[in-house]
Length: 231
Ligand SMILES: C[S@@+](CC[C@H](N)C(=O)[O-])C[C@H]1O[C@@H](n2cnc3c(N)ncnc32)[C@H](O)[C@@H]1O
Image 1: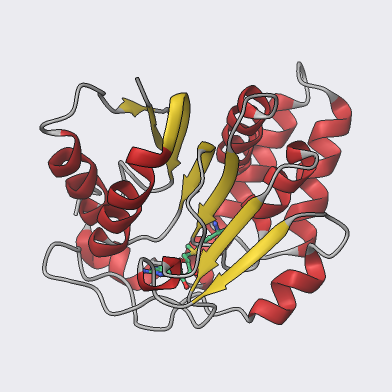
Image 2: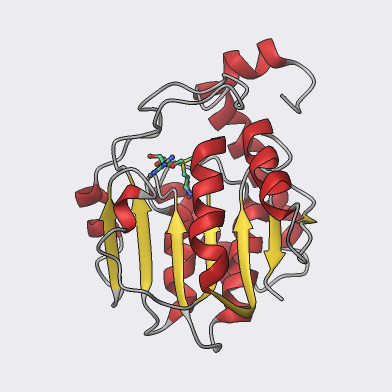
């Protein structure tokens, strides 16, 4: 566990206390961002936070928004693995226009963790049905839902190029599978971003191991996220 106090993480990890902490922090972040960012964007983030539960902070939402925007006019699809109630997917929808967005999730919560994970998560944590997410995003075109364990859920997905992909699966095996599947499919300059890189040991290990023999390096961001730009 990268965070200093593992017992504390176990107690609050993904539960009511963590959600409350993220909400309080996000309120402060939104107030601070409101002093210099587009007011409409702040309003948009506040709306998503009211509508859906998420452990993604307001600044992390901004990073997903900003990276999506930077890739929106480039060739290639968007994808997300780890959708939960659809907060970050909603942000990608706002930006993507007619682009294809593929959403991958068990829609039954987290799978079992491995010995490379810190042991702070429970199986089936963050379950949300595909029906609930597809209703939330029903106004947006060209979204496909891929229910099941990633990467098994990719078997009927057509080969495609990707401009921006967002990973938020919390665990080592899932993150490694995301990197293996998407890396060869990213356009040059395409962005792979992940939540929890500096918070969850399994996520960081997956990036470190995967990039060991690649020319790209990981770019760590100020909150828990990281990104890789495909060369
Ligand atoms: C923390 S939640 C995602 C949060 C979301 N991005 C948001 O905006 O709030 C993690 C999600 O990853 C999914 N997940 C984890 N490992 C997976 C895997 N190997 N295949 C499919 N879904 C997975 C879980 O079902 C859960 O919905």
